[in-house]
Each structure stands twice: as structure tokens, then as C-alpha cells.
Amino acid sequence: MTGGNRERARSGSAADLESPLFPFEEGEFFRQLVANTSEGLLTIDEESTIVFANPAIEEILGYSPADLIGSSKMTLIPERLQDAHAAGLEKYLRTGEKHIDWDGIELPALHKNGHEVHVLVSLREHTHEGQRLFTGLFRDISDRKARQRRFEAVFNNTYQFTGLLEPDGTVLEVNRTALSFAGVERADVVGEPVWDTYWFQLADGARETALEAVERAGEGELFRDELRIRGADRTAVIDFSIRPITDERGEIQLLVTEGRDITPLKLREQHLRVLHRLLRHNLRNELNVISGFAETLLTDLEDETHRENAAEIATAAASLIDLNESAKELADATLSDGGPRTPMTVGDALETGVADLRDQYPASTITITGDTDAAVLGGARLATVLEELVQNAVAHADEPVVEIAVDEGVETVGVHIRDTGPGIPASERAGIFNDEPVTQVRHGNGLGLWLASLIVDDYGGTLDYTSRDDGSGSCVTVRLPRAR
Image (tube, rainbow, N blue to C red):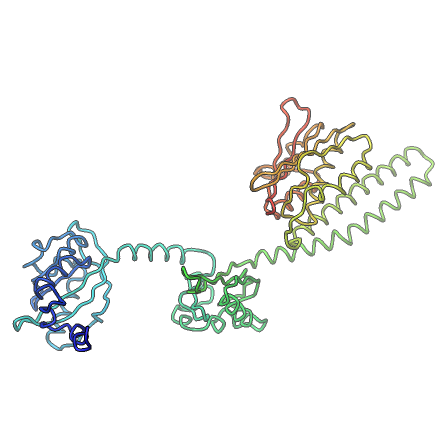
């Protein structure tokens, strides 16, 4: 094609349409184009009478072109909006002033069946044989509006603080929960860098944390931390995160920021730390004093009854000291995440604890079978769990026989601890192996099973209990995620 032909082809003149390069006559070509487009076309005159409609209108609004041509545009406009439409067109014809932008108007149109259809309309004025006409290009956006409503329902009806950011940290959207907490309007924060918004204007580094979070998320990294933010009538400690959202090419398009108010949780943690210090120091020291005096009395007293009383005191003190140690371990497990979970073999977690128990209970028989080289995701506290569960099986039988069997599944590894003892009483199992509430009547006396349950749950595992039908023992199963 020569340069002149290329220019004529680009110009789109009537002469070009009749050339060999354009095999259709102009009128026929545009009739086919209008008839086969998937977007609706509708033309009205100055009297709001519909003078043209293409077949795609029927797909969108249910009316065939023959149904519409010659009728008023009000046929397609919900009654509540008809006065505004009529006034807008009348004002434009009189003054030339548009009351809305004609490019991409989102509005509801009335379907032939009576329901409303959300459409996107682009409107243009033109003339034909001296008559002023207005043609609209209609696109059905009902699915998009439905997705938008679903998004808004989730976005604005959550107790979490949620926002959408540009990759550079500019705020695009914030949900009602976050706006209400700060006592600000959407317009106060949209378009602002997130670190400059109301929530992060505290003296303890919240702004710097938000800035760092955006920078790291902008590099494709999930950022998560705890920080204190500012509200309208209080501050709050939140579990704060920013994660990147990428397109199919892996390019970051949005950042999603979330904040979960954990202020009550942090307050309970603070109270637990106080209790932890009390158990660890004060109570233990006083029990050691009681135990020491009881041992002295046991040695010095000559009266047999008094000696028996002193022995009872010493035994009770020793029991409370053991209970205090379990409570301390439980508090340690609650207040600490135990560090990162790492691959470790079940055999390594069992080895030391089982050896100690064999020495402590020489009449016991403890066997280990199965794939002890199976690796799970855990940590140092896993040994505490297994030792506690095996000791629980050993300590309640005269000549206990305990079988520990390890099996490796596709996703998990199970450790089954079977014993020949009397089983775990229902009161001890409440709240640990089931969802039964712990009450003044139904509760356990020890903390070891609670400690085991807490650690297993922290490792993403489960703890189950079954008893043998003949009452000759029971089985506790620990199941943990398998390490890849």
C-alpha cells in the first residue's frame, strides 16, 4: 500500500469505502456493524421519541427494536427518575448546558419484564436531515454492579479495619469500621498516603511502621506486625498487615491493608504475665518454706500422729509445687509463640522423655513402633507434650504397659499412645478432647493435659482420645502437620 493509500484508508472517507480495499457499500457496512454489535444502540429525537434501536437492545432490556421505535424514552426509565430525565433534556435543548457528563453514565434502565438493569451509557448528539438526534451506546453492567455490591457487603460489614491502597501507599478505599473508629469521613483519607492518615499519627512510631509496611509490600512481601493506632476516643493495639495483590503477569496492582483490634487480648496477656510472675516466684517460694518446715517437723517430732500430719503437709506441699511448675509451663506456653516451627523427627521428640520415664517408673513397659523418622513441624515444646501424655499413661497403673505407635500420612503424622490403665476420667477430658464446658463440678485437677492441648493447637495439630470398649485402657492420639 502506498503512502497515499494508507492516508486515505486512515481517513475513512466515503470514497475509501467504495474502493476495492473496502468491499462493502457504506450504508450496508454500517447496517451490518450496528446489527451485529453486542452493545445496544438507541436514538431519540428532541421530543424523546425513540427513532432507532438495534437488535442488541433486546438482549439487554428485553424489547425488540419494533417494540421501541415510535415510543417515548420514558418506556425505559424507572418512574422515580422520569422527571429528572425530562428536565435534563429540556434544559440542554434550551441552554446547551449538560446537567451530567454524557461519557459513561451509569444508570438503571427498565427491562420489559419490569426489573431494573444497570447500564453504562455513552451519549452523543448528531443531526440527520436537519433533525437533532441523540444516540446512546448501552452496555449491560449488571454483573459488575452485583460483584460491586458483594464486595461492599464484605468490605463494609466486617469488624476488621480494611483498606485498599495504590502500590505507592495512596489510599483508594477504607471500610466503615476503620472510618467509624477514627471518626473521619472517606473524603478525609482517600488520596492521602496511608502513613499520613489519622490512624497513624501517634508518637510511638506508627507512621514509620506504616511507611515501612508499604515499602515492603510494594516489593512483593507480606508485612505483618503489632502496632498502636489512634482513634476518635481511644487508641487500639492492632494486628496490622499489608499484602500485595498482583495481576496475571505478577505485577503489583493493589495493596490490601488489614487491622484486627487485639487490645482486649493484649490486656489479658498483661494480666496473665502478672499471674505468671506470682506463680513463678511468690507462690513457689512460700510452698518451699512450707515444705521445708514440714520436713523438719517430720524429722524432729516423736509423736506418731504428729509425724503423720507433718508427712501429709509435706506431701501436699510437694504436690502443689509440682502443680505450680505445670502452671508455670502453661503460662510460658501461652505467653510465648515458642519460636518458629521447624522440621523435626518424632523419634527425637520422644527419646529423652521416654528414657526418663523408664527410669522413673521401672515397673513400666514402654515400647515405640512405627516410623519414628517421620518429620513434623514443631519445636522444643513438642517433647514436653509427648512426655506429659506418656507420663499420664504410665502414672495411673500398677504395672503399666504403654505402646507408642507412629504413622505417617500424606499431610499429617500421628503419634498414638495406648495404655492399659483406667483411662482419663471424663472430668479431666472436658474442654480438652471435646467442647464440653469446664464447670465447678466438671473439671480436671491437673494442668498437664491443658498444657499439651495448648501446645499441639499452637503447632497446628489435633489431640484426640478414645477408650477401649472393655475398659482395659485408652488411647491418646497427637496428629501434627507433616514436614515436607
